[in-house]
Structures are given as structure tokens and as C-alpha cells.
Length: 196
Image 1 (tube, rainbow, N blue to C red):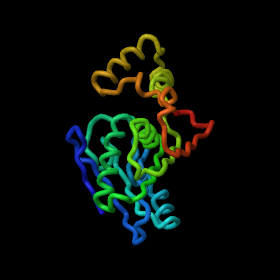
Image 2: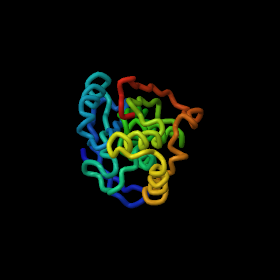
Image 3: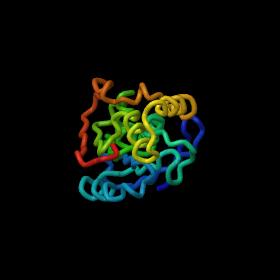
């Protein structure tokens, strides 16, 4: 079933709900940077077949069928996720237990949303290769892709991100806010991950 919600800033966001006769659990899947909900199909199949879960596969803003021109690296998407949780409750019942599973940018979305806090329906999150702090990633990518030194260019990037993209780097460091991660959280990460 194709579902559409409107974000707080007026974007039409899309997701696919895969129903199951067993209505005891819903898993919401959040994909990574430059991917779409289809990239989460292997997880959807696993949760649907192994646990009898209903699965909601989200297209993040500016990805797949969802509207938007700016990628929020999970920071803006955290508010969208809470709207999807409300929609799941409308579709499947107010008391449906929810598990969240994200990869890369989708995992960061879950962590940012967890810092803001979830309703009691959310029973746990699975974070695979989340961005923990955006600023060092931008510094490393400037050097690797554009061969630019961090100083002074990171300050220009920081101003651009803060005023144009509305992502303040000082609020994207999840490690500094880890005490606010109140929910059961499985974090998966490998030392060979050169991007994150």
C-alpha cells in the first residue's frame, strides 16, 4: 500500500506499507544517502517472513518518490519520522509496537529522532553505519574529493549548512548527546567503513 504524508514544511513524502495478517508488530525502515526504500527490501523480507511484521519502507525527503531538493542527512528527516510513526498508528492502531531500522543516513535519522524522544510505541532501534558527527565527514570529503584543506573552507560550508540547509553542525554531534538516547538501541558499525 502506498502511503503519503505531508512534512511540516509542506513536502509530500512517500512510503510503502507491506501488510501482514499478524498485526503484533510494525518495523519502519529508513534507507541511506542517495538510495531509495527499495534498497531496504532485504530487511523488509526478513522482518515480514521471520517475525510476521508489517513493514513500512520510507522514501526520505529528496529521495525516491518523496519531494524535496535538500538532503538533510537525517537531521531534518527526524521530524518526518515522527510523522510516519503517527501515520502507522492511524493505519494499524494506537498501541502497535514499532521497531525502527536504519542504514547510514537512515540510521542517523533514528539517532536524531531518539535524542528528541519517541512515544512509548517505539520499542527499539537498529542503527547500521550511522553518521555520528557531520562536520568531520565534510572535512574528510573536501580533502578526498576536492583536495581542499579544511581551513578556511569548512567555515564556508558550515555557514552554508546553517543558513541555507538549516543544519547547524554544533547540533549534529550525536556522541555529545548520547545520554539522551533513551531507547534500546543496537548500533552496528565496521572499522572498514571509510566514509562514515
